Length: 454
Image (cartoon, rainbow, N blue to C red):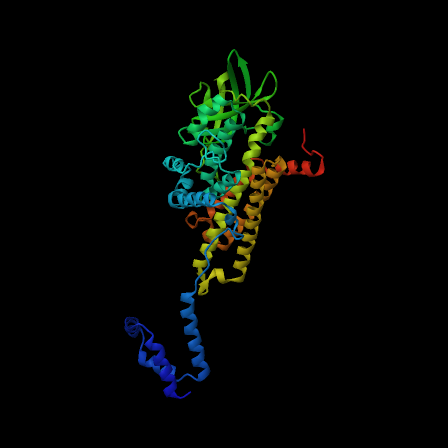
C-alpha cells in the first residue's frame, strides 16, 4: 500500500472521531508524530493496528447477558398471579431490605421498621386457608422463602419462624378458637410469633425427650425449663413452647405470651451467622399458662413433627435463596472486576467456578420445585423434606465457598455482598435438623432399618 493509501485510510478512521475528543487527544500527544508513525507502518502492521482499534470499539458495544440464577426458567412454570407475587417480593427485598441488610447484620440488630412494610405485601401465612391468609400453594411459599433469602437469609429466617413455625403450630395443632384469635393478627404482623423447641442440652434428640416440663395444676399448666436458639423471641408477642408432660411423658404445645409470669427471654450474643435474627435463651420458671392457651391438638411429638415437616421444605428453599444470592452477586462482581486488562469473568478458571456454582444451584432449584409440587399434592413425606434439606444445605455451602473464591480478598468484605451469605449458610446447614439427623430419616426410608441410637 502506498503512503497516500495509508494516510487516506488513517484520515478515514479519524473522520469518525469526535472533534472534541480529537482536540483533547492533541493536548496529550503530538498528532503529527502519530501520523508519521502510522505512515511508516507496513501493511501487516497497519492491519494489526486497525484490528486492535476495531476490537476496542466492539468491546465497548458488547452486550452482556443478564444475571439470572434461574437458568432452567422455572419461573415460567408459575401462573401469572404467582409470577406477579414473586416479582413483588423481589422488588420489595431489593428496594427496602438490600440497602440496609449489611448494616443491621453487622450490628446484630433487627430492622423493626421493615415489619409494617412487609405486612403490606399480604404474603404472611401464604399457604394457609382462611383467617385472612392468601391461600396460595406451598410452591409459592417456597418461592417466597427463596426470594427473601436471595437478599437476606436473616430476614427469611424471621419470616419463616413467624409465618411457618409459629403460625403453622397454631394452624395445625390449635383449636378453632385459637386459630380465630391469633392467625388473623399474626397474618397482618400485628402480633409476632416465635417457636421454642430446641434446648441448651437437647437439639437433635428432641424426639427422645425434652428437658422442659409441664404439669397441670387445676386449670393452669406450670412450665419449667429452658429453650435455646429461639428466633424472634426477644421481641415476639407469643412463643410456641413445647414441653414434656410429667404425668403422661407426652409432648404438649403451649401459646406462651410474653407477659406470662415466669417467662424470661435473653438475647444471645456473639453469633457468626444470621446476626440480624434475634435469637433468645428462654428460661421458664414456674411459668403459668392457662389451659385455654394449650394447643388443643398437640398431644405427642408426632404433632410437633407435622409442623417441622411442613416447614423443612421452606428451609430447603431458603438454602436455594442463599446460594442464588451468592451466585448472582459473584457473577456481577466478575463482570466488573478487571485484572490484566480485562474482566475476570473472561478467564477460564473463573468461568469454571461459575458453572459449577450454577450447576449446584439449578439442581437445588429443580429438586425444591418438585418437593413443593409433592407438598401441594399431599404426598410429601418426612424423608422427602429431609433429603431436600440434606442436599440443599450441603450444596449451598459449596456455592457460597466458590462465590467467595472468585472474589478473592474482597469476598470477605460485607460491602461486596457475598461474605454474609458465606456465614449464613452455616446456620442453614444446622437448623431444622442437622445433616446427620436428616440423613438417618432418609436412610430409614430407603433401607427399612432405623439407625437412630437410643
